[in-house]
Structures are given as structure tokens and as C-alpha cells.
Length: 236
Image 1 (tube, rainbow, N blue to C red):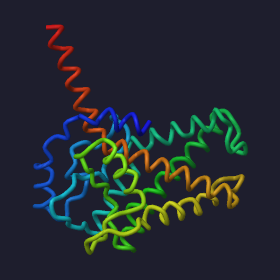
Image 2: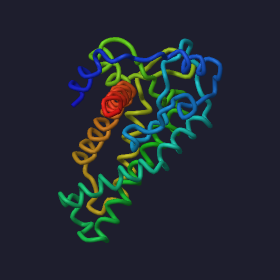
Image 3: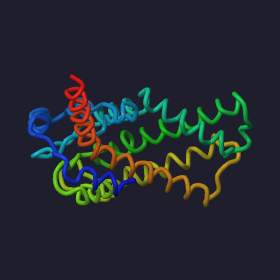
């Protein structure tokens, strides 16, 4: 999916990032929720941690980091994603101890939503504050599709420090590792080391896919808008 998406957006106009960059430059404490216009991707997936690439990097406060985590964790889109994950789990009958029927689905939904909430706070609030790292995804928005694809994937493992510069994204990797460790307490079948590694890999893969969609969604949105406008003009 990622490669076709990058190729589709290869020649898409990146748009003028100047307004967002100027706003980020003038408001050093603005979170991605304030500087990025698209609060949700595909009208469902939370997009509060995305910001346009600033001309001059400025960190955000611990309060702003927890604000981003809270916006992502308690958004209706996160509830919808948890419901979808619970449905997939119900169909494939993972975690059979949950059973089937309404009660089984409710248990799966509860644990799926807990995974999202704990993961959001660990990777966007708690560890970024402790480690002085920036939880935001800075959208590149320019260059070839492949270059932007590589950038989006790389942001899982590399992030900005509050003091400037970049370093390994401990908040993402350690934060998700902590979330997986906590989850062993509320999954009735428990999780051994192999299960934990698999769960961590799945979460990192989901976050990687999320970065890719965040990078290219504005391009796709513009393409869809132009196509819709063209069809409307043809009808008239």
C-alpha cells in the first residue's frame, strides 16, 4: 500500500506550506492540533500530532505534549478504530477467553481501546516529557514520493529533541514497549515474550502506516477535491 501511495502522490502539488510554517514560527507553544488544519485523516483517523515542517524548530511544553496525547486518545476516531480492531478480533476469534457474542465483543473493544489510550499517552505524553523528545510528526510535504515515503518511515525511529537536533525515537519504541507490557495485565490469556514482541511489532507497523498516511493525505485530499470539482463542472 505504501509504495502505490507514494507513486500516486509523486507529482501531486505539495501546496504552499508558508502559512502553517509562519504560524508555527510565531507560536512556539502551538501543538499540532492548532497548527495543522486536518484534524482527521479519511474523516476518521486522529491527526492531532501532525505539524507542517517549521523553518525554525521550536519545542512544545509538557502540557502541550499531554494535550496531543489526550486529543488522540479520546477522539471519536480512536473509538471507531478500537471498534474495528475488536470486530476483526471477534471474527478471527483471537483471545478465545473473551468468548463470542455481545459480551465477547465488549471485552475485545475494551481491551483494544485501552491499548490505544495507553499507547497514546506513553508515546505522546509521558515518555516525550521524561526524555525531552517531541511527539509531533513533522510533515515533509515536498520532494519525490519515494523520498517522502522514506522520511515518513524514518520518523518512527528518529525524532526531534526539545533542545534541538534529532535522536533515536525512544519515546515511540520504549513507549509502545511499556504499553505492551501493561496490556499483559488485562488480556486473560496473558502474553508471553513471543506474544509481546509480536504485539510491539504490530504497533510499530500501525504507527509507520499512520505516518505514511499523514504525509500523503493532504495530497490525496487535494486530488479528490479537484476530481469532485471537475465532475461538478461537467454536470453543470
